Length: 390
Ligand SMILES: [Zn+2]
Ligand SMILES: [Zn+2]
Image (cartoon, rainbow, N blue to C red; front, top):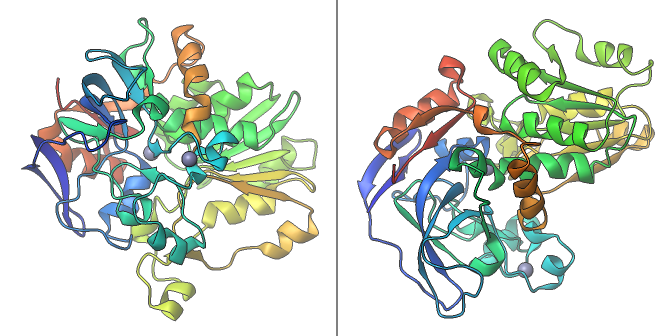
């Protein structure tokens, strides 16, 4: 089959790779119909994660049709339309039973790698190297889905693939930021980053009863899109003193909940940080610019939720502000298995619309060009979505 492969720093190519096969009884194979780019791919593009290898197949957000099922798969049949959580989790360990699927004990295949980086193993994620399981990605004609009964969900009839693909990762990540950030009725919520996750956080915050939602970015076309589709207010941080403006819009206190949806997405452009120079470890330094501002702007006693992707160490983290202002700091990779059925219901009822986020729909063969558009935010790109099987 054809797949979009990482070929080295800032180099991608579409290549012929072996077809995936069932490896255990709970696996299934999905024929990929839509596969989205994501900010979490950008550190991979730059070769910033340990154990990346030439030929790795990228992509972790996808929908498609079931092509083949293992003998123990109960919930899916060949031909079903399914969306698959980007998080690979077993569904039966202690963490999965608490709904903390991205903390799964059994989702990775090389637990020692994650243990050495983070102290404990975590769930897997498609299209990532060994610390996250080493599962081949979805920018391919077919993908192997382990724990199929746990990670894949039927797409309701009225929901198009273009909408459902965002239930794989971006929508659960957005929902998580608002729900675990404890957004409630009457809250003022600020969200850094008006990409797909930021816009979906804003929609989730509104659905959870927030009084005002303010999205912060510097790309005017993203801010316009966010105003049109999420109903949120916006701030351009190139033109505004963000903390001052947020105080102004929140009775002088600062937002109750601040969600960071940027991560190390701009990481490739960031010079080596102190931690990186000190440890000499690649991928070890990530600039938490938006986290810093969120901590600074948040009202005393408020919550900061970090949704953006970080993998290693950060410098200049304002722990003093967290402590002295009594902030609650939370974060997670998304526990999609917990929220995807609810999100698909909302999509089916037209309460949650996401297809506008796919600003560029491209055949797989244009994968390298799609990532260039996405990385550079060129031509108003929010997400490039590939169509490996039309
Ligand atoms: Zn993603
Ligand atoms: Zn588990």
